[in-house]
Image (cartoon, rainbow, N blue to C red; front, top):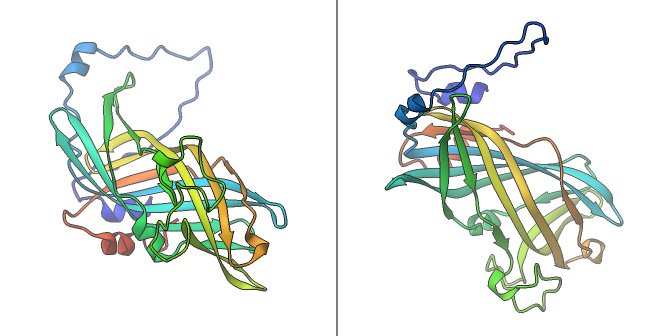
Length: 268
C-alpha cells in the first residue's frame, strides 16, 4: 500500500485491516448496531477527482498455443459528483496493462485502442453496513468493443460481416485492432470484438480512500480477422480467480491521464 501512503493527504488516518479468530469457548457476541445511530451517521463526502486502479484476471485458451493465464491492471481517471441524494461516478481509461503467465505471446493494446474505450457515467451506492462501516458499490455497465450492441440482439458477432461490426477505432480495419507479439514472428495485428461487465464492491476507508474487490461477471471475445492465419482463431476466455483487488484514492482536482500515468508508475 506504499503507493497509497504517498498519495494520502497528511490528515488522512492510517487504517490497518486484521482478522480475529476466536475459539467457541472465548467467543463473544458482537454488539448489535444501533439503528438510530446508523441513521445519524453522515456518509463520507466522495465528491471530487480520484485515481482508480482496478485488477482482473482471465484464462485464454487457443488451440495452437494452449492456455495462458493473463492478469490485467487498468488505471482510470474518475470524477464523482452528487445529484440530489445519489453519487454519480464518471470514468476515463488511461492505461491497460496486461501480463501473461507465459512468454510465448503477449497482447498489446495500442494507444488508439485505449482512447476509444467508452467514457462512462453511472450511479454508485454508498450504504452503512451492519458492521458499522460504509460500503461502496459500483456497476460499471456493460462495455462493447468493436461492435454496436443494438445491432447484435443475439449476442457478440462471430464474423466481420455481421452488421453490428464496424471500424470502432477508426483505423480502416473491422472491429478493434490489437497487437499480439510472438518472439519468433514479431507483431501480428488481429481484429476483435469484445464485451465485458465489471462490478466494484468494497469499503470506504475514509474520505480519501476506497478499497475492495473487482467482480467481472461477463467476458466474451471473438477474433474476426488477423494479419496471419496463425492467430485467426477465437480464444476461449474464462474469468480467473485472483488479481481482483481495486483501490481508489483521491487526487488533485483537474488531474488528467498524464497525471494518472505519472502516479501509477510501474504499479501492477
